[in-house]
Image (cartoon, rainbow, N blue to C red; front, side, top):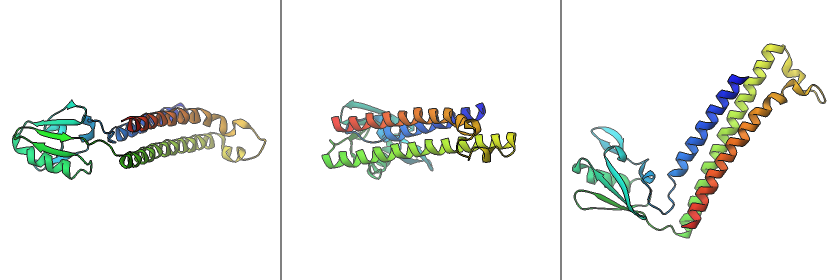
Length: 195
């Protein structure tokens, strides 16, 4: 039982972390280095993230500067950003790439808010799937110990310990991690609306 709980909690933590990472990549109109985390370039035959080929800084609220360690990558970096669907404008002076992060229009804010809600819902669904898996694992454990224990828990007014009391800690974990995802999504939505 404890092993099932630990496994479920570990998976739920990873889901929250994954959702937080996905939400951090949603553009808010403010320049952050996380915006470019998903952008990769072809560097010596392999896909390489931008932060591994140069230094990325935010000198101004709406500007990123990429200073590649290899100056021959400048055009490759500009192409990768242009093809990334982030809506960012680039320019270069031969040694650095400047990336302008445009102000968000009302229409774009609405689109991004929908995206935040979609990503949060995907996270909540993943948490609920983990809950289901954990409850199934507990039922199997009980079935293995009590023979026909799973049938016992189906009757009305029967023994409450037949299956639901062990699911309560899993439901508490589910509630905790779903609330964490909700908090992340709410924070991202308010960040989108305040800019």
